[in-house]
Image 1: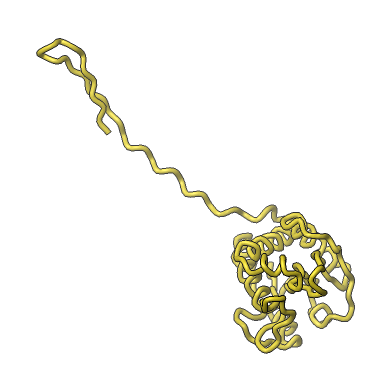
Image 2: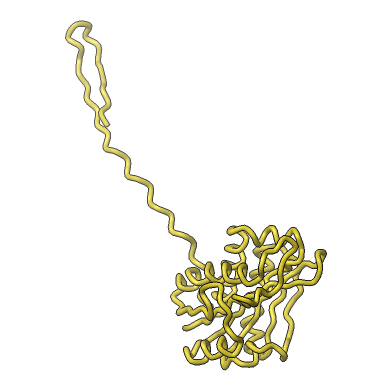
Length: 211
């Protein structure tokens, strides 16, 4: 199974910009870079439409997914609509795209507790029109909101979003939850032995533990 992941914007197209200058393009790329190992850990093939801060035309993004014969396409963006705006929404065009978008949206809301703006059908978005496979576009939060811009600056919040998207994809594909990081085994305790003898001077029994 192959998933094409599309970090929105890039290069001279920064997308939305937060109150202190945080760029949507950089946050989207960070989320998608965290998303790759999570999906690969599920045994999925993953390809990014960009893996650095470069401009990739919308048509080229679709071509990358189509030529690779991806089974699904997920684009990652941030929203902007004033400093008081909140919420997460996931966009789709087709019914199959809606089926993909539904668990992704649910997982992001469950992970973040952000306002649920729901699923939105859009037939005017290039990447949803130009890809041959079921596609969804995740609007992961409002970078225009100062408190959420601050969250998106942290590695922890970007990773939280990435893992939520991965969990949603896993649920859609009936793969179960994203596997956690393995916990290293506890070190084996050193062997312990005891020796007992009688003191020749006082006659008391003395026990010594050796590790």
